[in-house]
Amino acid sequence: MTEKNLETHELRPANHFLRDQIAADVENKTYGDAVLQTRFPPEPNGYLHIGHAKAIFLDFGLADEFGGKTNLRFDDTNPEKEEQEYVDAIQADVRWLGFEWDRLCYASDYFGQLYEWALQLIRAGKAYVDDLSAEEIRQYRGTLTEPGKNSPWRDRSAEENLDLFVRMKNGEFPDGSRVLRAKIDMASPNLNMRDPVMYRILHATHHRTGDQWCIYPMYDYAHGQSDAIERVTHSMCTLEFADHQPLYRWYIEQLGIFPSRQFEFDRLNLTYTMLSKRKLLQLVAEKRVAGWDDPRMPTLSGIRRRGFSPEALRAFCASIGASRTNGTTDIEMLEHFQRDELNRRSARAMAVVRPLKVVIDNYPEGQEEFVEVANNPEDPNAGTRQAPFSRELYIEQDDFRETPPPKYYRLSPGKEVRLRNAYFITAQSVEKDAAGNIAAVHCTYDPLSRGGNSPDGRKVKSTMHWVSARHAITAELRLYDKLFAKPDPYDFPEGGDLFDNLNPNSLEVVHDARLEPSLAAAKPGDRFQFERVGYFCVDPDSSETRKIFNRTLPLKDSWAKIEKKSTPAG
Ligand code: ATP
Ligand code: MG
Image 1: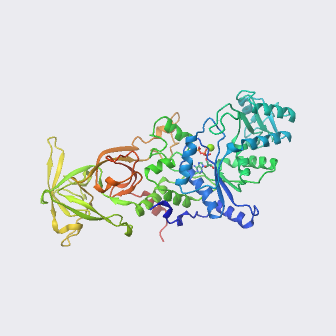
Image 2 (image 1 turned 135 degrees about the horizontal axis):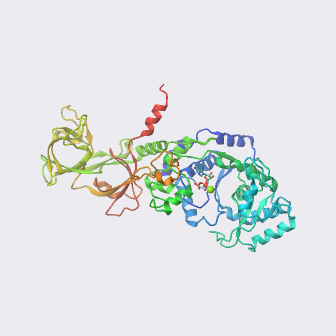
Image 3 (image 1 turned 90 degrees about the vertical axis):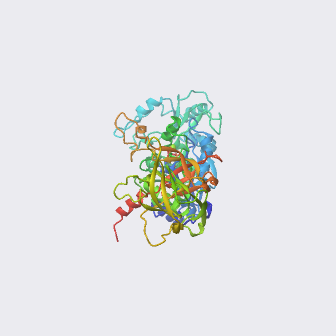
C-alpha cells in the first residue's frame, strides 16, 4: 500500500490560533477575492528536520484545508552557506511528507526587484549608505536599555546614496566596507528598527545567480518583500521573528506593495533532540554521525531511513497544532504515533537477535514442515505465510536460563513453553562447549500441540519466537537509540559542549542475527515488526546476499504509559 492510499482523517489539524486566524480571514474576505496564499521558506543551508515538518504541515496543511495555495520558496540570500545539494534534498523531503507546492520560488529570483525597491527607498530618503564598519555599527546600535546613536553617514543626500549604492552593486568596494541601511529610528525600543542593514557587500558565488551580484539583501529586507511579490496572505514563521514583525510591516508600508502579514507560532522542541541545521551540519562535518541521513539524525532523511513514515509525522504534527508560547514536546509522543502506524501496517516476522541453538531430540532428523503464521494480526487482510520448522532452531539467548531466577517463565530445564504458531517444547538438557558456554539446549516437543495449541488444556506461561536454523538467513541489525543521552541536550556544564551529551550507545551493531527466510526478499525501505523485538526496516546499504535492518523503535510504548498517567480516569 502506498502513502497516497492511506486514510487522511488525522491530517486535519487541531484547532489553534493560526487556524482560527485563517478561518476568520477567509470568512471576512480580508484579502477580497485573492486566494489564501502561504509559503514554506527554508534556507538551503542544510537538510530539513522534524521542526521543519511542523512548519510544512502548518503552511501546506492550512492552505489545503482552506482552498489556498502554498509556494516552496528557497530563502537563498546567504551564498556562502547554500548549496544545490540542499535545494534538491529539501524538495524530496517536502514531497515525502506528502505535500506538493504550487510554485517553486527562490528569493534570488527577486534580487532585481529588491534592488529596484532599494533604489526607491533611497530616493524617498528612507535608506542610506553607511561607511561604518560592522563593529562600529554594533557599538552605535545601543542596547535594550540605551538608545542607539545616529551614524555620521546617516544624512547623506539621496544623490550621494544612489551613487554609492549603484557602485556597491557594481563591485567597486571591498566586502564589508559599506552597507545600505533603512533610515528608521536609532532610539526605537525595538533593536530591529534601529536603522537595520538592508544590503551587504559580498563578493561570493551564489549557487543560482553565480557572480551576477556582489551585494546581497539581508533576511529582513528579502523576506517580507518576497512574500509580497508572491502575494502571500499569511506568512507563518516561528516566534523568534516576532520582534522582526514591525520591520516586516515597515518595508511593506514604505513600498506600498501587497500587504502580506506575518504570524508567529512556537518552534518545535523535542526532548533528547537537537533541531538546528547549523548544529546538525556540525555533527555531519565532524563525522559524529554517518551523514545527514544517519538514522539517528532528526532530519527527515534520517528518520525516513530509520523507518519513520510521513503518515505518522503528519498525525504527530496535527496533534501538536501551534501555539504562541514555546515549550518542549516529549519525543515519546512522536514515537507513539509512529508505533501506532507501524502496529497497524507493518508485516510481522520472526527474527532472533542473539541466537541460541535449540535441538528437538524427538523430532525426526531431516524432516521439515511449514506452519502457518499471520502476517499482521492487526490487519485481517494481510494474510498468512508459511514458516519452516525443523529439528534445529534458534531462540533468543535471553529466552533461556539454565538456572532461572524467580518469576522467570521462559525456557529453563524441565519447563514447557510455546514456540509461537508451532509446538510446545520442554527443555531437557544443556550441551556445553569446551569453554563451558551453552552450545545448545536439548528439548522435546509435543506433536499434538501443532499450531501452538494446547492438546489437553494444560497451560504454558510463555510464548517465544524462533527460526529454523537450517532455513534462517543471517543478517546485520543496527540497533539505534537516542542520539543524545539527556532530555535537554543543551544542558551541559560550564566549559562543556552540546556534544558532550551525545549518547555513546546510540548504535549497537549485531552481525549475525537469524531471520526467517521470507525476509530474504525484503527490499530497502520495507518495514516489519520483528515479533517481541521491535520495529525494523531494511537499510539501503543492504545487498542481495546480506540484508541490513535498522531498528526504528523498540516495542515498548512509554508514551502510552505517560499519557495514561496524566489523563485523569473517567
Ligand atoms: P535552523 O535553525 O534549524 O536552521 P531555521 O529557522 O533557520 O532553522 P529555515 O530554513 O529558515 O530554518 O526554516 C524554514 C521555516 O521552518 C521557517 O519558517 C522556520 O520558522 C521553520 N522552522 C525551523 N525550525 C523549526 C522548528 N523547530 N519548529 C517549527 N518550525 C521551524
Ligand atoms: Mg534560518
